[in-house]
Length: 160
Ligand code: SME
Image (tube, rainbow, N blue to C red; front, side, top):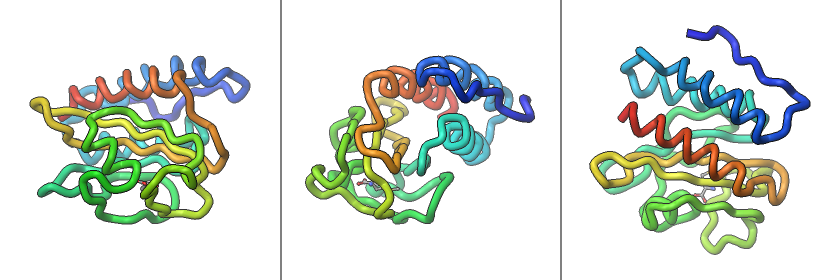
């Protein structure tokens, strides 16, 4: 297991993901515990990419329940179809929100969160968990994040 992440600060966002994702894959390889793996993935993304809040919500009894995360405390339960996370779950698709104030029903866990990207991971054809990445800057997520984070969700699906 790698003991620290190697990320070039001056690299482009795509270069950072290209460097980070294989390191994340190495970090989780051989560890069967999901909570341990999601915890390290949240930390690797938060500190590797410099985002404001990175965390997982797990589908439990028809609700999303807060899982491993890095950043300020967050709301613990989200109903299906509610907020960005509940909508991503209901639609089974990635959502990029350039300005959270313009997303109907956005759940504000922190007033400092300005934009976000939310991605689902599937098990047996059903959404099993959600990755939520928040930025304290407007319009911080684009197709580069979507492409690389969807690749990461594929790795996470292999852990489920
Ligand atoms: N903003 C999310 C809720 C989770 S927090 O941002 C950590 C939403 O609207 O679903």
